[in-house]
Length: 263
Image (cartoon, rainbow, N blue to C red; front, side, top):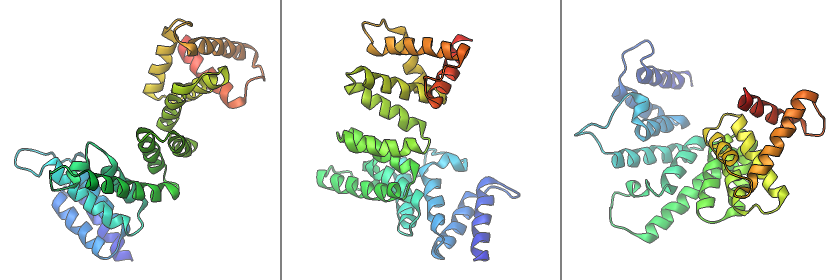
């Protein structure tokens, strides 16, 4: 096993230029060898090289392989590692297959085929679900977004919540955005505000922008605005008196966010 670790280490050094001159082609050759020996993440690393050439300081200049060709190769290598049980490869393969703007690149035939598109999407969902069920946060997020755009709100919220529970702030923002569309009662609206506020407190740019947009609207036009302003007042009282009425987590969120706003 040591020689396999040495092969991968050599490939990484060639990719990063760590102690040697960068050589993408040689790195790929070493990783192909590691893949033949059954190293699960070797195919993942090769797939990543083709999926995002910028990671390897390469560019798609005139005369080079096209982005579509790169995606075909990336999907091929991700599949090899996915079949060996590599979770991130499952996630990446699923992302390529399910992404509408990339799906045509996976097929070498440019002719539109709805049945083939459907089968490709099903395979993408299969790999993503496998990784998600094993607890991979990114796969859970991707699956939630997929179900949201597919119109299955219940499944979307289920998987986004799984990702949010692991600290994925983007998942929290998506949950808030979905719930905002159907929030009617005061309790539902307060829940939406708490989610946006939590994500904003963690520095998520979209959540911060949404909170600022909410605050900019008059109460009558934006139902969430009055809630936000009331929470701001509560937060200012907490800052002065440290009132125990608010939960520890949410009061801390309010403290941090309001402190930033009033500085």
